[in-house]
Length: 288
Image (cartoon, rainbow, N blue to C red; front, side, top):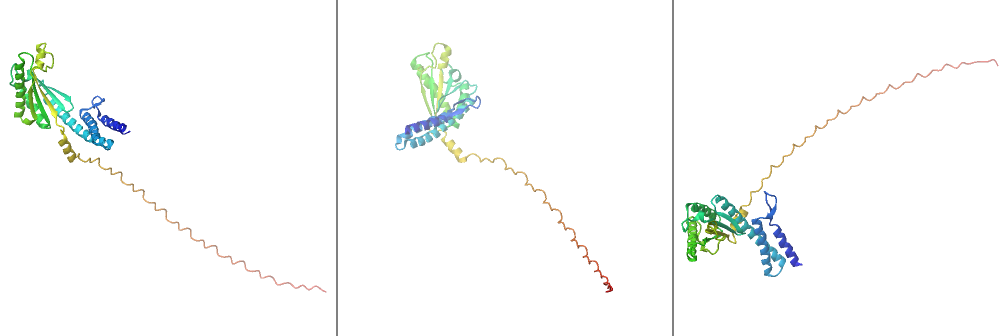
């Protein structure tokens, strides 16, 4: 039962990584969201290693892993966007090869003349833009790797690739990138990008690559700063004052109270007719 709940919890976390492209309306896994989802899954798995309540530990691990993964993903999203904008039209290719890795490919026609380790003016201008972005996003390391084609001996090409990598690394350090972030190596002709079958392909193989790898805590400082500052409280719309209260119609004073008609005094009481005084009774005397 616990395993089933754990699986459901991790699946739910992964589903939250799904975002909708605002331009196409299609759902997909965004880089930052994918980092949060994968970080949550790894954190959930690691949380169960501590014993005890696996579901609780998995939840805590997922929460921590999700926060870290999302921060790294967002950090690299912004860095990639700025790098692409700053290198438009330079011929330098910018690719996201992993969730925490950004790869820059500088072809030979941009960086060096044939059989040379001296940066061209075009390459220097492009590296100025690269250094500026790298200085804005210091939570990463940069591995500079030089490559050659198969013309010449293996040993010569190895040394040439190392010199070219050193030239790029040194230029970045001279323009503000912390030297401790930089490593360099030469691969000679051992890792061709395409088969060395013609000059066009050889030109692609003569290159310098920069692998920019985010630290595990990349973006944490920015995220904490945003949380401390918080978003400005929404002032909202002004409260509706409403309509003025209806005063109502003036109270009806009513008609003046009817005083009534004057009480009828009545007709004067009838005194009656004067009593008839009767006539004196006539005495009749009949003869006996």
